[in-house]
Length: 138
Image (cartoon, rainbow, N blue to C red; front, top):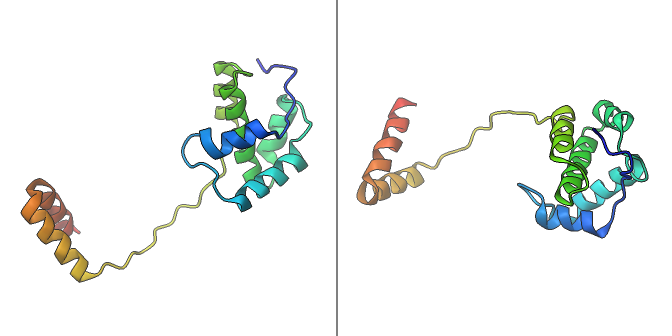
């Protein structure tokens, strides 16, 4: 299922993919690009796509390596160097970096709330009712 001849190489095409073509958030920060480039060169550059590399990435202590690897797999799929089946299997097997979910309180200015509710009451009655239900319901 995994093509035997795919070697990981950081090139201009991959960098352009990260900046312009990847799904969701594109890489705009030069600091992030430099970090990704260093991770790639240290751990993935010159290596061949195979089960051993996939296992290495999955168990690596630096979880950001998973993201860089997954981005490269997306790039390989985008450039039609791997099949949809291979792409889907690898994306399923290699988890993305785990995100810590926490609730952050956001202070609400009572004057902003008053202006928002007045605006909605006057211009968008339906949304006003929804907001009012949320506000009253806690």
